[in-house]
Image (cartoon, rainbow, N blue to C red; front, side, top):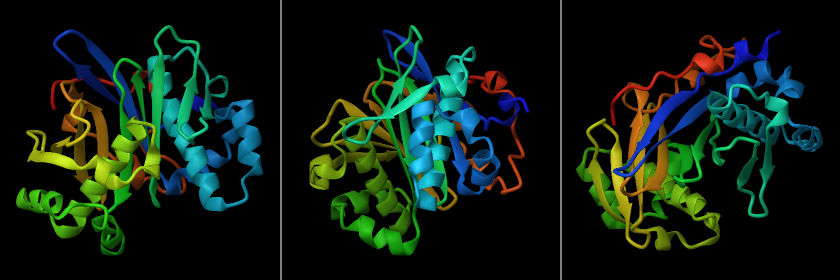
Length: 273
């Protein structure tokens, strides 16, 4: 089997500033895609990743690890189609952040996130620090998320038309994403990641700024029952093809991926923000 023919689709995005333009890729997979990729794990994982993968006993951790690596490597291989997945090593840093080791002349970095139903990844140049988080926004989880959001933040989100649960998920994912960008993770109190301003973005998503980290912004999208948030530099314009990230791969069934093709042909940048 040609592994490239089973790649999930990577979505291209541009990172535009007055002084430069960069690019990156976003990929996601649903938990239902685990079975179709599990049979090919030896073709996806670096030898050190494979050793760790075989040591995992918990099925949900096994799923998230493999799908996270598949997503990240799919995105990376769009930037470096000459490489193969087993030669790409995504190490785990001492603070559990993913570290992409590669031989490319561009210093690429990776962000990986999981929820109970999907895994997603960003690959981006080191010139543009970024981070990603995704969560479902069901009522039960929203109760916990609301405890980490200030009432003024929730009011601002509800003011632009979001319901209570979705507002809590946007606040939570934005704060978790900035904690990843700063590489502190959730070891810091969430009040340090307070949100200063929130507004609807022309692409239908949301844009916000932080009180204490004024050099960063976050962009959030509500997609079905999930919220996806990305943190990036404040003055960078994030331009996704098709007017925003898609989670279409999460609709895949366990029998396999319905919309797969050669990853080297999977991006087509178009204007939009």
